[in-house]
Every structure is written in C-alpha cells, then in structure tokens.
Image 1 (cartoon, one colour):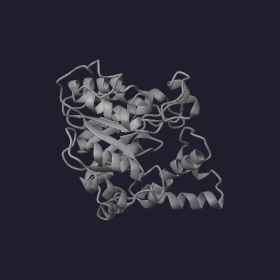
Image 2 (image 1 turned 120 degrees about the vertical axis):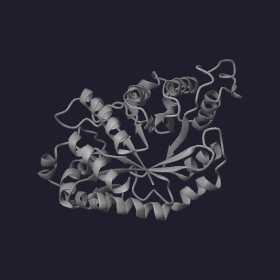
Image 3 (image 1 turned 135 degrees about the vertical axis):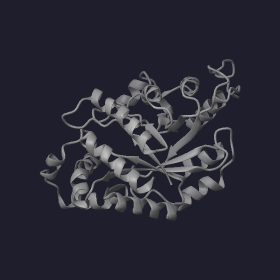
Length: 331
C-alpha cells in the first residue's frame, strides 16, 4: 500500500494562518524523509479554519523545498477556473518539477455560497458542464486542440513539457465512471461522508477504465482523517477537537480547532457522543498498529492502491507524530 499525505493547512486556535502554511512546508519535508509517496494540498475558500486557498501556489513553493515526493492538489475546484488557466498552471508546475506534479481536480466548490459568488465575480456559478470543462483541460494539457469553440484558437503554454498525473476526486458512482472513462486516477474522499465507500464504486471505476496519456492502468487512492498516538487513550484525547469540529461543521460552523484540553471540557449531548463513535469509520483514531490494521483491512475489502492521510491535530508536534508513527508501521 502506498502511503501519502493530504493537507488542508489547518488554522488551530492560538495559531496564525501564516503559521499554518509554514507547517505545511515542514510537513512536506518530513513526509519526504519518511517515505510518503505524494502530498496534496486541498482548496478551501471563505474559511478561518484552513489556510489552503491557493494550493497551486503552495505546490510551487513545496517543489522548491523537496526533491522526490510527488506534489498535487486535492483538489483544484474546477468550477472556479477556466480550462485554459488550469492547463497553463499545471503545465508550468510540471515544467518546474518534472515527473512530480499531480493535477487533482474536484467538482465541489470548496466554500460557502458567499465565497462561490465572489469567485465567480457575481455571475452564476458554473455548476454545469464540469466534465466537459475537464475534458477540455486534459486536451490542452496534452498540447491538443480541443473540439470547443472557445478554446480551439489558442494554446496552453508552456508546451512540450512532462505531463502531470491527472486525478478526479469523488465520492459517488458518477465520478467513478467518469474517472475511468477519462483514464484518470480516482481519489475517494472517505473522510467526507460516513458509509459512502463501497467496493461497487471502485469496481465501476475499473470496469469503465480506458488507458490514457495520463494513466495506463486504474489507480485508486482513499483519503482518511487520522489521529495516531503512542496509546489509544492519548489518541482519543488528541482526536477530540476534530471530533467536535465535525459536529460543528454539520451545524454550518467552521471554526479554528480548539485545544485538546478545551475539547475535553466541552459538554456534549448523548447524540453528539454517539455521532463521534459513529464517525470512527472515517476518522481513524488509535495507535499506529490499530490504525494500520484498519487500513490494511479496508484495502483487502475495497481494493484501493493508496491511503492518503489527513491529520488535523492542534499542534504541529502531534500532527507530525501521526505521520511518523504510521510510517514506521506501514512503510
């Protein structure tokens, strides 16, 4: 099983957005030394909980700070961007870090209604034809002329560069089928929605896969939220702030992560306590062996190729410990 990193540049209570981005750089350097295969930056808008609003900018900086780990977006929220701009950005990144760039793309907005309309400059957001736009982007990445009236008269520069890997993010059968037909990797967001991961989704992807310039065979990654510590009790203590953050998110709130001490003393209803236990399928908490055993079990059941680990601990030390302990167990 390949092991990779998904980072959202979380802004925890008492810390700054600039610090969150500096910690992303440190995480990339540590992950490379530990043997993680790739690191993706997420895209979030209109939030004071995450600092990763421009992942492609962060990638360029990370590429200069590392030498072997693959770097990408998990994902570029394509509804906000023109296919030409996306192609030019990822061609430029690939020219600067040949063989190390991933174009991971998603259909979600990555923000609330206010952010969506601000990004579309007050125009109606582009929720439709996203797969068509992705197809145009892929053609431009390959230096091809798309069959599209708007984009057939221009090139996406720079040309003749090493192509990035291309991945489609998703959590549904429709995205699985589309990823397969387009010959893209399929990255499943397991930490988004409880009970969404099913073997049938991945079978749909493989059954519909057509080899492409970007990928010659099916490739599936699954992203988990993970908290690991030396003991199960310590892991539960460190995981509590993120558990509460998920409850708040379900209530429409996205606040900076509280400290473990604040979370320990935070009153919870019986329903909230039950929700935390139910969410253990998508937030893996425990020792490195306990979490590794769960990942191995899921790989056997669902048949994915790679686990992407997202750790949102209050401190950088605890976050790095999750990656370090898991690497010792799995790499």
